[in-house]
Image (cartoon, rainbow, N blue to C red):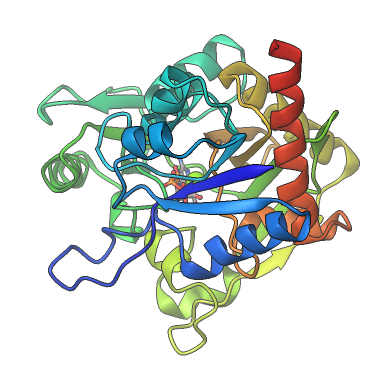
Length: 334
Ligand SMILES: Nc1ncnc2c1ncn2[C@@H]1O[C@H](COP(=O)(O)OP(=O)(O)OP(=O)(O)O)[C@@H](O)[C@H]1O
Ligand SMILES: [Mg+2]
């Protein structure tokens, strides 16, 4: 098949904020996906959507399907931009629809759906102006996050607040810096877990990944902050967390965590692949923080491949399964 790979490439640009390109993909990831697809005999056309006019590109270059990992260029619905154009041009693509991508990018909207499906998620409040009254029922500590970002952009230990005054100060900082609403959530003390789901004819929930930050305590980072993600593995900075896959869970905990992820994947309407981030509190409640329908696919560092490797898969199998699942969906539609 002729397959286009749509992505946004990470760049170095000292005129931009340090986390400006964090959501974008590295050369290493692009070449790993290209390699995996080529190995299966496909012809791959790389399309950097930060530079190409996607609409005109696909009018000129016919392809059988698009392998999409593009995070998009503009703010509000960025992850949906490429899928929306492809829908218009009637070109099939891998992964979730424009609708599911827009929904998952909006953490607060996703959380409303989780609540209505009785999937545990931390209690929350959205701040648009920054002077709304803070819910007096909240239990501190709270965490303040941009509502529509990923890669933990804008999330540091300073975002965990222990009183009303610091909460408002951080809310204003997020609104002004990230030019979007701030999401305030109760901070869940507990274990950090993430759950990968891969569709390949059937829906597979991969072994749960636990990330233990106790070895990073000297760095001052104690959860999956932007700094932890950006410099993961940097021993000088003390940012070497310990990964356990499968996670150290009882059978009951594991089932409950996997079920929360699967219900989330279905409630948001994800296709082919997703990664659900969960904090398991001391009572064993799996609080879903968010779902990522475009999880990082760096073959060495990203959480999703780690889970697939623990299931005995190779990198090529992940890419092959995503493609196969999308092709099957296209056939069923036709
Ligand atoms: N309510 C919470 N309680 C405890 N920790 C939290 C909470 N919200 C966020 N965190 C911590 O911050 C990290 C990043 O938060 P979140 O997953 O919401 O952001 P993101 O930018 O969408 O991340 P991703 O890189 O997965 O796209 C979490 O993995 C977790 O360590
Ligand atoms: Mg996350």
